[in-house]
Length: 479
Image 1: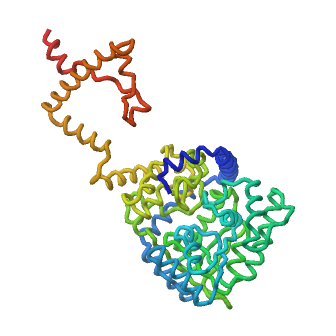
Image 2: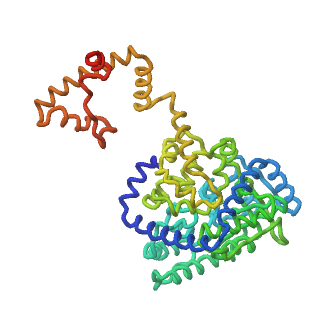
Image 3: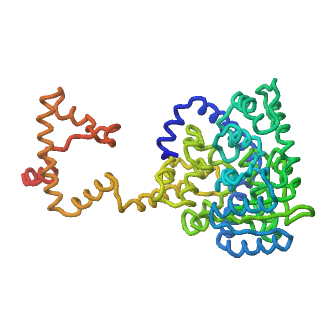
């Protein structure tokens, strides 16, 4: 992916994309505002959610061991994955052990983060997305552009064409008379997916939360596809980021109030599935994923990003995201949270695209106001900008060289005097030039942008004064 400015410029030229985004985010914002307004103690819930997350992160090592003990005590197998490659290999090896060549998937940001579908495909294993929006993205050979609604950049007519053109190659074809009515599109997806649910022997899920004290994993969703994946296959593999832990069921209660209101604008999710260990007739595996999370945890300012419960509220209020969409961020985590989470997980100073993300913001603060766990995204953005600058100090850009030169000149009165003298000579030369080439003389010349300067392409650069203040004072101040 190119750096954000270039990708955003391309996205801004797509008027259909901007219309789709404006309509979808506006609708979600209105629904969220209505249900949040019903909760009188909403700010207290936000404070409680942030406090629970922060306390959990401070003792994350203890809670992880508690979770592992509870899971293994209930018949699950726990795997630890340091990075994406290890996590993908663990899932692929489980599939190979059971001679599985296809799996069904519950919508999972963690599996998208590690590129699980592509890794399985490289080993001859097909992964089918069963969430409606994820199915649209997969059939369209596309990328998700929103945390909650991955196909937010598509309208109904585009979805109808994807179904008509691509469904047959992946299984049951779409009806010949399929229209773009939402009910018909959902019905076509339901028939297409039903045969996959009934045929699959292995499923892969993520988890919205993991309750340490009981070894319970939790998935909230709106379509029922998650429930089908979690209960029907013989083998269930859950890939869970280590930051998804909450210590107790009472802690979970807070987040089950915050998440649905902030994400889908509902009082509660239609389907909340919980499972603790293996059930009769089913084999259960849990992959606890690091993949940069301990790096983020070590950052005293940035670690608050690990509070994130993936609600996408920050995306829906962000003026930058609304105009560029998620693809411009080059990651499965777009929008304001992606602008901080990607650099924290992967590090700064190693990739131009990642280094551009902390600048993909107006710092308006709307994301902080919307965040249900009070992540101060603007604070982290400013912090990450400083780390990007620090990472490139060994190979400074022109701006850094100019600032360092200015610091050297301004630090010594004698050097400053010589600089002022030189600018005065330049000012007199420009003054004479201005009178020759254009009416208005020096003043008009000072309003011209300096050629070759990116900074001055959008700014007026005044011509240097013909005399410095100190020179004038030496000459006039004694009178």
